[in-house]
Image 1 (spheres, rainbow, N blue to C red):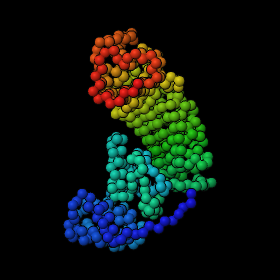
Image 2: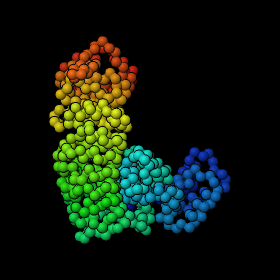
Image 3: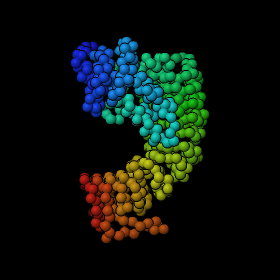
Image 4: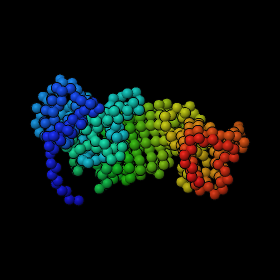
Amino acid sequence: MECVNVEVECLTEAETLNLFMRNVKEHQTALDPQVKETAERVAKKCARLPLVIVTVARSMKGVNEIHEWRNAKQIMDKEKGLFKQLKFSYSRLKDEQAQHCFLYCALYPKDCSIGRKELIEYWIAKGLIREMGNRESMYRKGYTILNKLINTYLLEEGEWKEFVKMHDLIRDMALKITLTSPRFMNDIEELPSEPPICPHLTTLLFRDNWSKVLRIPDSFFMHMPRLKVLDFSCTAIESLPNSISMLENLHLLLLRGCCELKYVPSLEKLKALEHFELTHSQIEEVPQGIEELVNLRKLELSYSDILGMSPCRKLCRLTQLHYLRIQRTKVEVSAEELLCLKQLKDLVVEFHNVQELTKYVKSVQCKSLESYSLEVGIVDKERLTCVYKSKYLSSNGVDAVVPHSDMEELRIGRWDNHISLSDIQSLRDARVWDCENVEEIIVEVETSDRGGHREDDGNTITLPNLKILFLEGLPRLKSIYKGIMVCESLQQIEI
């Protein structure tokens, strides 16, 4: 598409002042007369450009103290040119951590939608958000910084609430600031034939490049001792260079959506790694040395149908894990391994047999998780069974399954056995589909020592939080429940 230059007229002085004051006052009804006079003088320094006006004004939002405004005017008097005027807002952050986080955003290309959570993960890996005891606290700090950057107009809200974006002029200003102390590398068009010598490089992004197969010389990472963030997500890379094994200070390694990837070297020496993701690849075996990543906080191995892992309790050594996701792979997860992960807070896994699932769901650890999503029976894709989301369960080859009492969502597909919902007071959403032999949805079950069950059709069950009940593809269904169901919150039912 051909670019067209469009001339945008500057605002009039009256429009400039009006726009500036609207952004400065926030919820104040009026400014102190002395403050207002000085603020008007600052507004006149904004070259009547809307971006500069709003950016400078938001950096002074809510300020009603004359000395602070006089200082702002003094700074603006010295600033000549658009870049320096925009830099005023950056300087006004008065928070070195927020300034570094802002500059990091310039790594993204122009007009790029920036995922909020992804950006915070970069900040954490880079060390811009310091250790705070747990991952959730660090994310909260990240969102606080994001909101500060948005409120000062250094970042803008994206088209979707999960994203932010950076104005091109603001990005240019950030890039000029980083030129004085380069720490990042992106927008790489051609790789050098010799390994680059980058002793201070901390971030390297190859992401989002499907145009051609990405081939990296085997020695490429030999001279990058401080590299902390490395992202190959959504590239056509087929093989990672062996020199990656030398990145002993690496904190984050992302291989999301690397559909052509067939080889990853040993990760044994990457003991500083805290976050590793491998999804949609052609890797057949979990990378060698993964059990040595003793500082790993977040691990995802997903959507790789041929990915397996030798049953040698590799997960047991990853005792610092807070987040674990293993889904749509051949990796067999055992309850015993999961119970070794004492720091686990968020869990998304598929069990390959119901015995392991049942053992884990009954554990104290499962009950203490902040969120989880568990599945079973995925090996045979034709009989995907029962899923619980945000606290959930499923089964193959047993008479009945009793879900966890604090489950919020239940989804059951291609399932022919009983399930008891009588104790799930927190259940909000229940969906059952394609179960050819199911005659009843809810059958109260008391499991005996021999694994049998006893039904009681005369009881009343209460599901106080159930809002959605969806039933489809149940040709033999006779009743939802033979007794009395009390569902005072039910809003939607589809059969």
